[in-house]
Structure formats: structure tokens, C-alpha cells
Length: 64
Image (cartoon, rainbow, N blue to C red; front, side, top):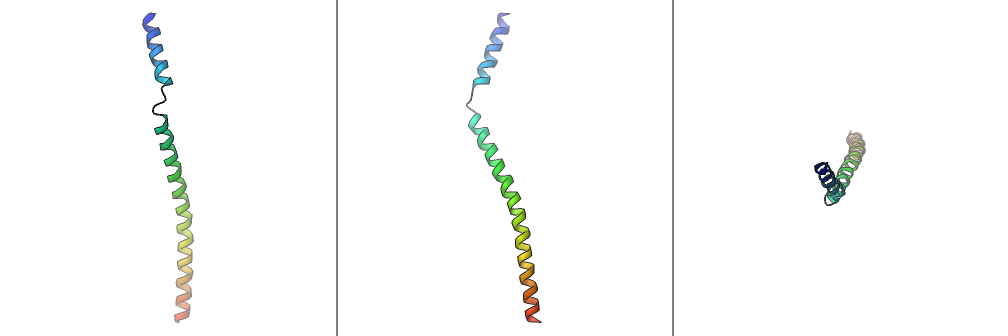
């Protein structure tokens, strides 16, 4: 029974340890920023493509 109490005590101490918590929070924040940037760039890429298509069409019409 004493061994069980010692094991539970050690596990409880490990659960209370918060030294790695900041690293996990930073990793989650970086993952969120990367996801948001990817989603934003996808939308922005479509808008830029449409703008260049319009400009190309206008230049083709102006030359002809």
C-alpha cells in the first residue's frame, strides 16, 4: 500500500509541474497564426489572380 501511495504522490507532482506549459501555449499560438495566414493568403491569391487577369484583358483590348 505504501508503494501505491508513493507512486500516486509522484504522479501528482508531475501533473502539477507547469514548466512545459509556456512551450505548448507558444506552439498552439504559432499553429493558429500559420493557419490564419494560410487561409488569408489563399483568399488574397485569388484576388491578385483576378486583378492580373483583368489588367491583362484590358491591355489586350487596348493593344488591339
